Image (cartoon, rainbow, N blue to C red; front, side, top):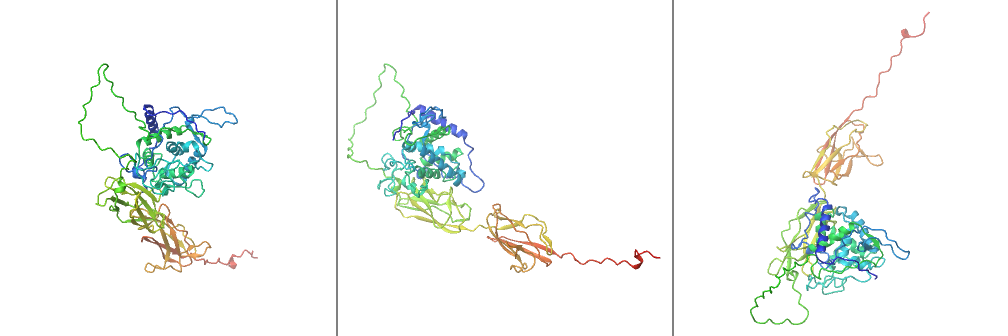
Length: 576
């Protein structure tokens, strides 16, 4: 790999200034934060927060909060400037740091395109993926990837054994990271195996989900950032998404700095020629320099400190590998329901109640900062908010993990949401959820015009009704329209008004569905030769019923008076 080490800003006050300016510029360019959209969808304000100190984002961290590269972008603008090249020299313009290896750049842009279709409300810019890829792996080690996007050699983070890092016991039997004892972040976007197990995507269409493939990893990162319905065009949405990737304010500021830098201009460079970062977050402080000490007055010796009181010497530690500090996960004995109500929702609706799980020790004491994974199981198209069927949430100070809101799909019936503790082989906790058919409890005509027609003709007005459920629009609700014999006999009539099927034959029962606005417009009605008053009854799932009166009047008589025959006295024949 012919990687070039470009000019970098080192840690210190300059880095702090760059980060602050980038964050301020990004915030100024973002749309106002959205907290509700009027359709029951979860927004940035409702989604699980990711904030240092809260623990909310830690459990859902893509990287397990592994170390990252802390180098910040140059102060100069990356706007490309023309450069004279020879036929044997690849064209490269602008700042070296602004160049992104061709395959890596292509992967980011393809991921943006896919997310624009599958999750348009996320508004994910490819530059955000590039910013994360920069701090996680230096754009796959300067673009050291094969033609299909797979890294030439695996990219592995440090062993997460609790010594200086998080303590995450093995979750993949070494399948992704080669370590069957502890987990390690893997690939150009640095996913830990337990996250990749559900967040992994096939971005290059080869039928595999490989964390070491930049196409797969970039698409997975995009879906991960968008999973709670966070909107990247808002400050709050962008902030929450980035912090959920790695729960650190320094990480947030570093990513935002590169995001703003790439938004001002980037260009494609050959694979393997990207710059490599040097500083990592585990090397020392990232952006805030230590405050300088106040100098002593010249000529005045420093006052010696008070010696400590002699005491019993401590027993030296036994040489060897440091013992990992036990994690909260190690102390969990079981998980139990934390007061989840009955989970029932109509197809297409968001469940009113959310699943709540509590982690406890054997003595029944709450355990905070434990990752609980919620997985939707069964024949269902229900999802968590954001369209995913898996979510990992850390328990709060009360030991409770609150799952994201569930949204019912169109498949009715029961399914299961399974809660498990990540990193422990404890008994799972299953929650039953039910999806009922869409329903309406009221129907009303949208017009009060009388429906009349002459025998043998057609009704001038079509019947239109609006369906509601508890006062709200009842969309996509199944309905049946029947021309019945009488109010007491709801069977289909064999005379009177009728609809026509596609072949033009009379039909007196139709199966229909309300539209997105809860409206149901019936086809045109026709009348046979029988005059009288008839009834049209419309019923829906949920029990809503409306009966409409139809009047058919007799057709006018076709008999006419013959013209009188002229009399002889009116003859035009002249007389003699």
